Every structure is written in C-alpha cells, then in structure tokens.
Image 1 (cartoon, one colour):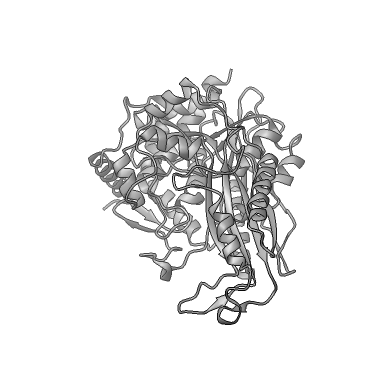
Image 2 (cartoon, rainbow, N blue to C red):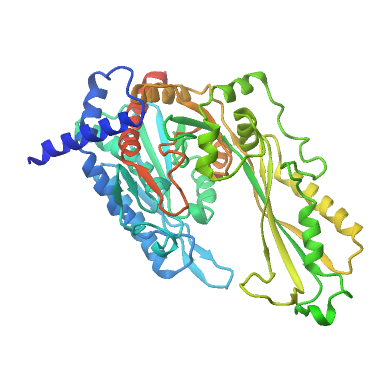
Length: 507
C-alpha cells in the first residue's frame, strides 16, 4: 500500500473507532487555514507518534539521583532543543547549576530550555510550560509492556511519560510544526519553558523565572500549562485552580536505640504510641480536619461556583469503579468535587523508623517520624497552617504527659492557585475545544499541586491557564501510563485551533 494512503486509512479507522466509543465529533467542519492544519495533522499522525516513541525511549527519570539517569535527562533536553531549533526557534539552554543531595554528593541539573518563535508586536505572545522528566518505571513493577518502549494497543499509547508530560509537550510542538510545514505564518508569538526536574521539585526553575521576569518573560501575555488530565474519559476540560500542599514531619524520640518489648514493655512512654495518638488527632473518619481554626481561611462558596459543579460531567458510579473503592465519604457529585478541589484535606502518608518488614519482630522503636500533609485551598496560607498544626500537636502531646521529646516541622509549603476564568485565553480555549471536540469543556480544578502555576502568576503577573489533553484513566505516575492516540492527535489540533482563536481575541 502507498504510505500516504496508509496514513489516511489509519486516521479514518482511528476516528471511526473513537466515534464508536462515544467520543465527541466536531459540531461543524473547520474552514480555511484550520481545515488545512487539521488535514495535515491527520496525515502526519504516524510521524507524530514515532517522535513520541523516540522521546519515551529516553529514561529521563529525575527522581532517582543516579549519574546514568542524569545523563539520560541531559540527552532528553538536547533532543527537545534540537527539535525546536529545526522549527526555527531561537533556543537558550540555561544551566541551573547543581543539585545538592542529602548524602553530601551533588549532580548537575539538566538545562532549562527557553525558546521563542516570533516577536511581532501586533500579535499576542503565548508561553507554553512543560517538562520532560518522568517518574521511575520498571516492567517488573507491574507494567504489561516495557515502560520505555511506546507500545500501541487498541488506540492507547503505553509508555512512561506518554501523558506526563512528553505527549502534551510534543502536541504543542506538532501544532507549531504544522503551521511551519504549511508555510503559514504563526498566528501568535510563541515561547517555550521546558524543564527536566519537575518530578523532583522543579529544582532551579523558580529562581530562573524570577531572574528572567524582565527579560525573557517581559513580552509574555499568556501562559499555558498542559500537565494535568480531564476529569472523565470522554469530555475535555479546562483547569482553573489547584490545591497547595503543606507537608509535615512529627518526630517522637526516646533514645537512638530501639528497645526489646519483653524487657522494657510496660515501663516506658513508647514513641510509637505517642505518635499514633498524635496522628489520630488530626482527622476524623468523615475526613474532617480536627486542627482548630484550619477552615477559617477557606474561601466561602458562592452560588456561581456551586452552579459550575452542577454542570460538570461526572458519573459517580463509573468514577467509583475506576478508583476501585467500595464507597466515597460523600454521596453527591457536587460534594465529591468540592472536597477534592475547594476544601482542604489531610492525608497521613507513613511512619519512618517503625518495623515494617514481614515477620514478627518484638521491638519498641526508640524514635519514629510520622509524615502527613494538608492540601490547601484559597485563601489558606502556608505560614498560618504551619502555626496551627504545631499548636495543635503540642497541645495533644502535652495531654499525654509523655517523657519523650516531640518535634514538628513543615518540610514543604506550596500555596494554592486559582485563575480568572474570564480571561481572554480561557475564552479562546473554550472556542478551540468546541471546534475540535464539538462540546463545551468541563471547568475543573485539580486537587493536586502544580507549583509552577502559582509561581508564574505571582512573578510574571499574567494570566495562567491549564489546558489538559489526557483522560482521567491515563495513569500518570502509575504502571501502564498511556495517552490515547486520539487525545494526542486531537490535542495537537486543539493547540493549533487555540493559536488562531487567541489571535482573534487578543485585540
């Protein structure tokens, strides 16, 4: 078969398969330049998938501080920089320095890419943020395929980084390359900020953003992030808020060595018993946080906001089955969404220093460390929350009359982020979604924390929007991570349509 004809047939079959599954089709065919762009993307989708395969093959794991993996990260950033240069972008690979490790060693931080295409003062400048590092993945941990070999099964592209975040980064690049290949002028000026340390806390990025505020970012009008997911498997979404995160350690110490429970059990204040009591005082069985004053700063619920939750497409039973739990703490869609997005939550993560191996070891730990975090929402403040947590745990510990020592520390404090959904780029994105998917998007928040959104908003003082491409079942950070071919290709079209809509609305 002729290769060009084969690509067309493949595109048509993929489209028919997705229509059978209930995916949305465009409400009306796009016209003119957009039609040409969509046709080009359909005809070249196998090439776009092949590039994603090449990128997924790079084991760009930033979480494990190993020299081999760090070299892979540098290779990944070089691949991306070369790809952007071939598009005609001016590319600056900024060296953020070195990462100091807890063991005293250091590793080089991969370069942060600052790239730009176009500087026409008559056009809006849209800056795209993405990352190319990934979470660790091994096939023996439960992957059905090699995590670093992109494998297509029933229209799903499996591989580490496919949805988080290599696929969305490439979808943006695919949209740009489409205009370039068609020899059409880009509708907007485009800038890229691409890093390789997001999964390890975006080491060096905040400092760079502040340093470049009046240089690289001075001409930026809008910032787009595509590093999260839709709420469903079918309906597109726009994200306008994320929760913050305050992470705590509470240490209870008696001595450095452990004790034998037969020799000392019954005559000591045991650190583990103290710690369990402290952790048990934080949250009740309904998920309500028991720390006094913790809800005082939470923004009041408005009627307009309540209606937004009512309009969101969420099948609770399907959602419950996908999560594989018997029941949730709340019974209605609105309650579930509000407690995921606009109310704080407290989660207990683990205990360091306790015996956790198979078998029966009759030990009393001499010191233990409990770890928990609080997801923050507008208008909560990390410093206020830190004070409230410490006062509460000190009070609970004092009531136990323990002879042990207790210390509480907040090791991470990230503020929540919320955007103005009336900004022009949200309207442009809604129109682009309607064009590509034939439906209005769900307007959602994300219960997790994406620090760069708040950093951009506070530092650059420009509109920030999250425009996700992947579906809720993509399995980011998990085994068998994937992005649907349809989402990857239609997402490339979405970005192309967004460029055109943004150009129309800017002035």
